[in-house]
Length: 64
Image (cartoon, rainbow, N blue to C red; front, side, top):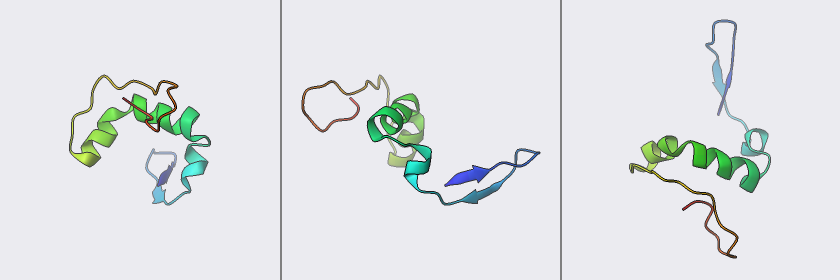
């Protein structure tokens, strides 16, 4: 969901396609996940720390 901002900073929440926010999974979404571990941690109920980007090892892990 995205926030349509108004002059006072309050807006209506609306549903958007993920590709509108993160155009490319590895370059955009994974980077956002790495920079915002608290958001994901709150959702899954775990404290995440020392989040590192994936290394090119042929696996499916995006973050360590």
